[in-house]
Structures are given as C-alpha cells and as structure tokens.
Length: 97
Image (cartoon, rainbow, N blue to C red; front, side, top):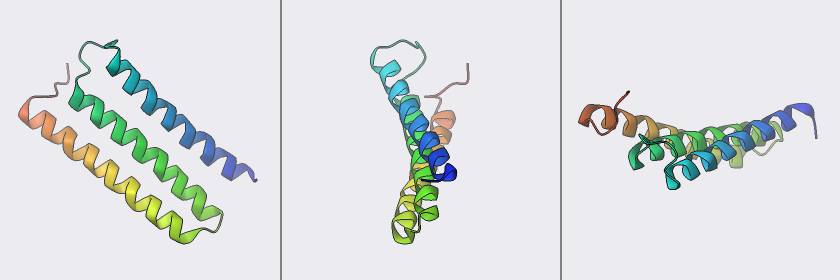
C-alpha cells in the first residue's frame, strides 16, 4: 500500500470518527444548542467527506466504477447537508449563535 492510499484511508477514517463523535454529542446532549437538524447537517457532511476520500482512494487503486458510485453518493450527501443547512437558516431552526 502506497503512502497516498494510507493518507486517504486515514483522512476518511478521521471523518468517520467525527461523524460518530457528533452523533454521540447529540445523543448525550453534551452541547446544548446541538439540535436534531444541526446534528443531521454535521453527520451527513462528515459522512459525505469520508465517502469522497474513499472515492479518491478507490480511483487511485484503479477501481473506476466503484469510485464513481462512491463519489456520486458523497456529492449527494454533501449537497443534502448544504440544502438542510440553508433551510435551517431560512426557517430559523438553526441559528448561528
């Protein structure tokens, strides 16, 4: 396994861990202003980023079709998180402060 593959796997794993941390912070109500909508935004965004780096790793390993499918799912998740974030700001469910 080359160093580029290791780097993408580590970054992908980091975003997976961030997804789990945000979910656990929400479940145990550690952060008071972290509601369900904002938690969904964080979880879908970090999951999308993890899938993106996984797609790059797949592409570098010569697995083109799997890379394209993974990239499509990652872009969908990132776009969903952006849309929900905008919806939350417009409706007032998510506040900046």
